[in-house]
Length: 113
Image (cartoon, rainbow, N blue to C red):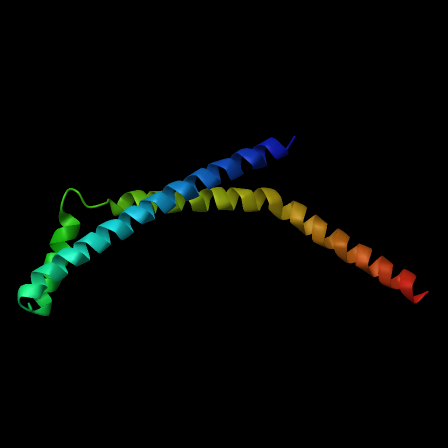
């Protein structure tokens, strides 16, 4: 009866991880394009570091820039699902490790007899 709960949470977790990976790809693609644009500007003449920083900041404030809040919200949702899965499985794993230890202890006793 507890498996459907865990299954659903793992499905949701996988879905959120996929969404976060897609969002990270958008960031990489946008950053690469932004860097190329700044480098093209600098090819004609070297700007001061402050001007370069201003150009990068300007690129992130444009409307077509990926929103960083989305990524943060996805990360928080993933953490929430991980915490819930950990709480749900923590006791089960504890029992599993105890049982494994007892079983190995019994095997050692039987082997030494």
